[in-house]
Amino acid sequence: MKAAEHFDALETRDPAEREAALMAALPAHLAQAKAQSPAQALRLAGIDAASVTSREALARLPVLRKHELLALQQAHRQARPDALADGVAAGDPFAGFAAAGWNGLRLPRPAKRVFQSPGPLYEPQGRSSDSWRLARAMHAAGFRAGDLVHNSFSYHLTPAGAMMEEGALALGCTVFPGGVGNTELQLQAMAELRPHGYCGTPSFLKIALEKAAEQQLALPSLRKALVSGEAFPPSLRDWLHERGVAAFQCYATADLGLIAYETEAREGLVLDEEVIVEIVRPGTGDPVADGEVGEVVVTTFDADYPLIRFGTGDLSAVLPGPCPTGRTQTRIRGWMGRADQTTKVRGMFVHPSQVAEVLRRHPAVGRARLVVEGEMANDRMTLHAEVTEEGPSGPLAEQLAASVRDVTKLRADVQLVADGSLPNDGVVIEDKRSYR
Image 1 (cartoon, rainbow, N blue to C red):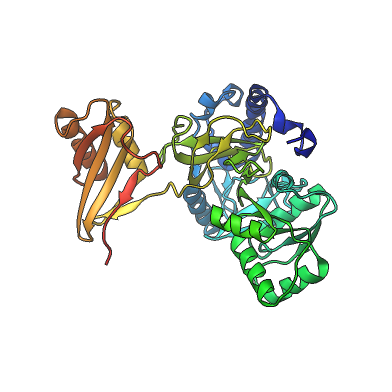
Image 2: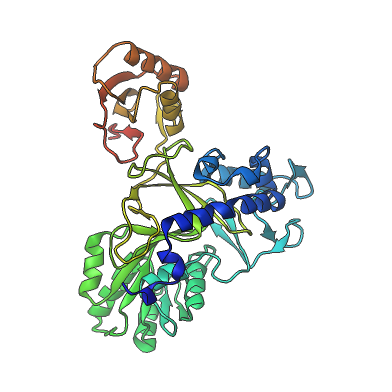
């Protein structure tokens, strides 16, 4: 790929230069977050921001997971607006994590918009241009200045429509805000306005093209797409390609903006230039080795909504080597499932973090998987634990069984298996019960 086809020079930097720049930016960002976000000041209390200049130092900071953020927001929404709890204004819909809001929230800056995601979880948008950084992903998908973009992401309550629109506007594109639903009207607009590209879910694009074929409606201008919000299997990618549409996917969330995006190489997803991504063992904040599947944890440099070590709950893994397009940023395999594998056994919740606690007590064990089998009300648990020397029983197995009982308050059998024999899929708790 020619250099001119990259969004900017950041994409082809020497990896060491990129890493140094990201780490150098961390201390000031953490200091600002502590000064302007009361909740982050609490979470980072006692931490010297100036000392966080490496991934090892970053990994010592706590992980904030979405369910925790939701619980905190709910607690603050239900409190009296004039009360203060630990420095965070009760009634603050963002639970003190935002630095942008509106009159009455005692925040440093006004927000541009506020959105509601399922939960409900509220997210502020700062006033900077393309604050979710989607322009980079759109450029990789082939969008260019002057293109007309048909945007069928929702403009109602949730930020997806605005996220894509701001990325398109930053590129110099024109946007048709189609939103969701109204397939007939959207098809009419596509036929009459002749957009160059589409943004939205891959399933709606398929529906639109099938409906157009039924109506013998030609859409010759529609040749590219950036899709997200759903799984995008190769079979659907090929189906769209057969109909003249080159579609690429991106990985973005309402909280964090762009995390990673697909390129013409079709080999995983390239990380955005303005995030720090860690892959950690589910239920913990401990980074795993490159190539091992774990939870995606992201730190952004958004001063208006400074999320530091935010656990997405998604599973992925780092891909080795650079992208064939010349982009030198790290690549990940894309979405590989959910990290939150919490299940209920005999009336008790069992969490991945509890399995992690068992492993912390036994350093001789590598990867482990807790398998739940049987029928409801007749559950049985088995911990499969990797060790260097395989053995069905012995002191280690007995010690592990005791630790599982101590941590979960439930009994489990233990099977010691050979190192490297468990699947590298990020699964910590596997529920194999029959619910029929």
